[in-house]
Picture 1 (tube, rainbow, N blue to C red):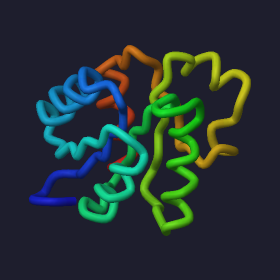
Picture 2: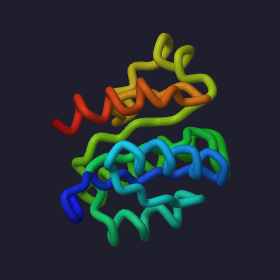
Picture 3: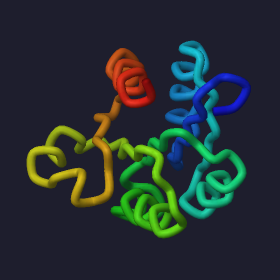
Picture 4: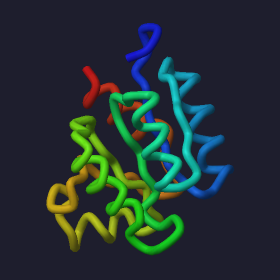
Length: 124
């Protein structure tokens, strides 16, 4: 938490997705820290100490999102981690997100209502 607001680290190589997430999160009282790559996310993670992470599944390469989540766990991350994917619902039905070290999967395009409801429940 920073200045009384939960900090959410969002990682996506699409600046439009990051801008959308920023608008939704900040409108609902969260502070967002954005990163455009896994490498940048590791640096921002150390600076921001986020309360929750939302990571794009496919950035520089397929599965780089889950690789980032694993790397952050190795670095001691205990914040809930969600993947953002265009195959979200399909992924959830074939893979257990917990096996990948994830708290859950958000489907692209993200539904702002689902996002905020999930954050409120998870960060309560």
